Length: 187
Image (cartoon, rainbow, N blue to C red; front, side, top):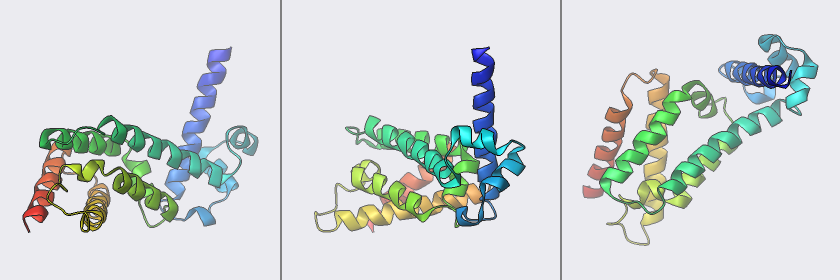
């Protein structure tokens, strides 16, 4: 009996989350109600409230799980700085984004929460994991600017890649990011 309840609970959470992401493709969180989510998910409001306080709590949990993944991934590459390791990290990150494309695309879209986008940028910039390999030639004064430039550019490229339905394979996109970043260093 407990397994069925767990499976049912997991299913309910999945359809609730998918419904929110679907609604956020055309609306901001401010214009989405719990009723809208429940109608699309074909669940009762009580089922929704079994898992979440409101639509904002639901979005926050999705964002927090996404940020936690990136935080863990960045920490696993904390002491790695070679070109090969940086490329491996980019491929791992892009694979996660591809596997969670619908959610990430919504979170990074104009309908997504700008607070989430700022937190994501903060994680990458503050950890400097993605910029360690590339920022060796930068001085202390320019390094923070370089990091911001690099991360914003990479996120913009990823947003475009998602909008284009991820036509470019992950390894090719990772190589392109590496190449363009290396070209900026020489510039």
